[in-house]
Length: 107
Image 1: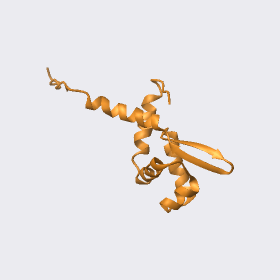
Image 2 (image 1 turned 45 degrees about the horizontal axis):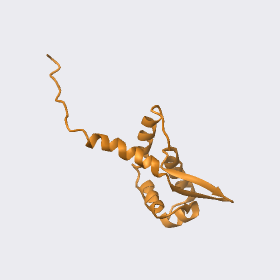
Image 3 (image 1 turned 180 degrees about the vertical axis):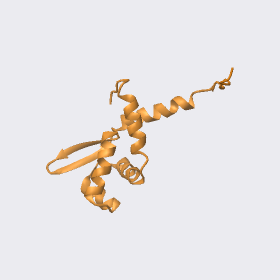
Image 4 (image 1 turned 30 degrees about the vertical axis):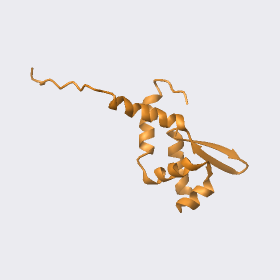
């Protein structure tokens, strides 16, 4: 998923927000194994379709999942390039070797 510098901060914020909910994490864990339709996700998670739809919308807006329609069913899968964006963002912090100490604000 190519991102421009203007959309990257939005996608990072949306991505981490999407990762902040236990049900959405459960959805992502199921999708790690394979593409699934909404009905399979509802059954596996024991949640209503309306509740799941809210969470899938959040994951989709964050770019973490893709959807495709086949007949009357919608299938969801992971969008791995967006996970790479989040991983690279965190890696930038890990790669910083030097943190400059703050100066006294009264100098």
